[in-house]
Image 1 (cartoon, rainbow, N blue to C red):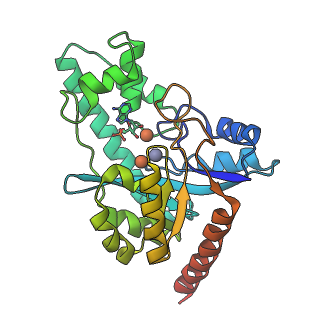
Image 2 (cartoon, rainbow, N blue to C red; image 1 turned 180 degrees about the vertical axis):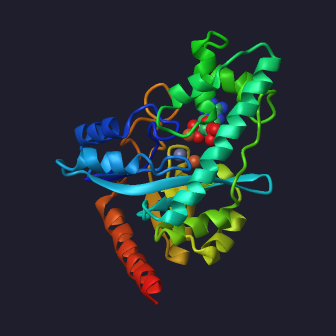
Length: 282
Ligand code: AMP
Ligand code: FE
Ligand code: FE
Ligand code: ZN
């Protein structure tokens, strides 16, 4: 049995609802999944609910996109306490920053003769946080572009005319946010960031795992990151980064880790939970 620990739902920019993901995961025969939506944990409870009558384990998760200088670094958090007030406050701020940014992007697009309404964007995003993929979808549906990719390539990507940088956390703050919610901070897909020299500092700041198994990681990268994990005693996580049908990411369950890895995460989680409780009591 195996687990896919990197999945996006409609709570952020995925196209499947948490319940649909749970159903697919069960059909695929996975033993565990983690919902790792961008900047939100709103999909976690619905997924847990949908999995109640099944054997599937749903691990609470999140993916925080951060910037360090001009390098984009993604921090995953596993088994975080989703009801933490402090976590909710930070995530609310990020949600509002995303909404403001979407408004700015709408203005930029309108100057180019592309007219989108914020209400429609919110409808497309559903209960989720607004991201560029939703803007791309609104553009496609209004006939301005014929694909999500075209929207990104011509308008929304970094360097393109409608691009607006998003207020981002720095990775150390992201690690702290996960830690404060008693979660396990993990460095996401380091092969994409191409800055391995930063790994020792991340470890020092509290990273407990590296996402070793990832669709774009070559066998050489996997071997390299396995060695890094062994050197620092880190957990080797992995997953598809599945965003559902219609998005350029591989399907659910095509990159997985073993149940042993999930058990490892769970052991670390229990330890963190105990420390967290002690801290709150003292
Ligand atoms: P945002 O968080 O609003 O900046 O949007 C980032 C999301 O857009 C990523 O998580 C991807 O899902 C998606 N994305 C980023 N670049 C591209 C691209 N070139 N083509 C399609 N989707 C992309
Ligand atoms: Fe995404
Ligand atoms: Fe990522
Ligand atoms: Zn992701």
